[in-house]
Image (cartoon, rainbow, N blue to C red; front, side, top):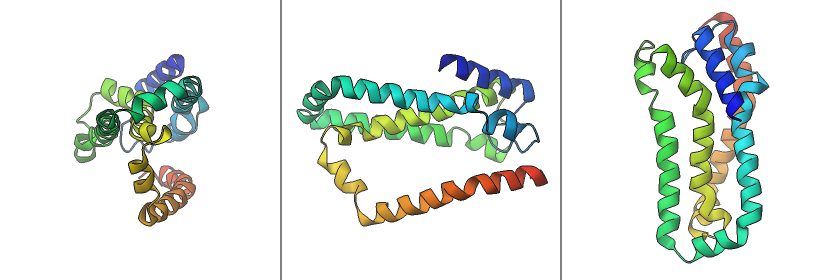
Length: 167
């Protein structure tokens, strides 16, 4: 995982990819579609899954006994995801706001940190917190999940199209 993050950083730094809007011909094959740059979040997820299987009993006891811990871990995860999404706001306004190192760093670790935040946000529901399970099981969130999946299935076509016309 660490080697893949370093590889991603080197690719992004070498080609000068921006955190937002790198629609260059090299961006799609070298960074976006490359398994070597996309694998860290998956490895992180597998490691968390293995840890969860090993420690499920102790995690369940820890979270079941402390509503405060459930809230703190969920809010920490939500805040982490918020930071990953909003840290690039200056780049949206001005693509020169980040240095080349900052762009490469964001592109190489941003996905993994987002997955870490999502894991922390969802962890209490994995081990028995009913509040988050009821919230995410709500009809509104089920509809949003379906729309999100549809968007995910279409985004690759849009990304390829935009990179081909260099927007």
